[in-house]
Length: 333
Image 1 (spheres, rainbow, N blue to C red):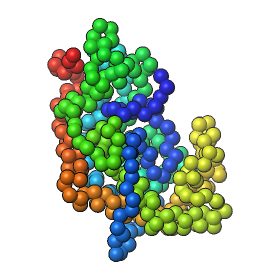
Image 2 (tube, rainbow, N blue to C red):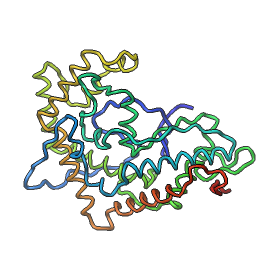
Image 3 (tube, helix red, strand yellow):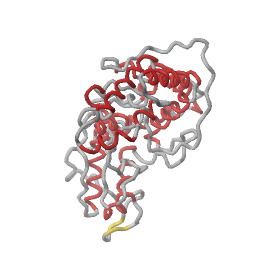
Image 4 (cartoon, helix red, strand yellow):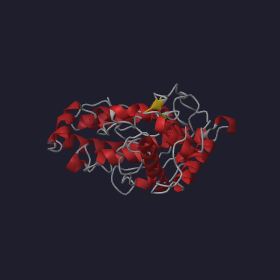
């Protein structure tokens, strides 16, 4: 099966190297809002690009989301339920081990290079960095590679397999409903209906980030960053371009580690981000737009409903036994 993003309970693809300073989510955003009103005083926090400042990467939505430990609980239950459902149709689905990621979940979104150890690893980061950083941003969700012969049962593209009925939405849909306590009916503003509600904060977070990136206060910082890099003899218009430079790809796939040029570029990039307070400004603006959502009238703010759904998932995940044999938990026709 050709790998790709799957919109259901898990991602059906192998993790790839993180290249961009802003997380690109596997969601379909139907539209984006323009910049909101500017506050009278612009006083972003100063956030450096070194270890020790992780707590300053927190955003307003974080207080409504599950903790890292709760997300791990949900993902472990997800894997057990998926295996049980697939086994019912005669498949032995291989699922990844779920453990707490080592990195702050907002690091990629906020362009923070503090965990990369750029002096040694350049943009590649330490061993398993890409997988761990991606898991943190995805709330501990880890991709599953679905063999082609198992895909119809996993996704529900067929109604029967091997004489047995296949659940609506496949095992992916059955697992989602088991954790959600049924179908979740939450409308996400300006978001395609194919995006499931349990990913709501990731969608709203991305919308806030897009608005922040288009804000003149941020574009000014990006220009300052570019000028700083030019002072180092490096010509990039933004950090995305530097981090995604195709010259770094051969080193990333060769197993030989980053080139000296990649390391020197990443070090200069980190220093310039720190000099212009890149992450501090971006964090301030994303937080500003997230706060606008939280302060909106209740009928226009889906965050409380999403938070309730996430807590329902955590409660239901806690009830899923480690060994499902004889538990009575099985797909029903």
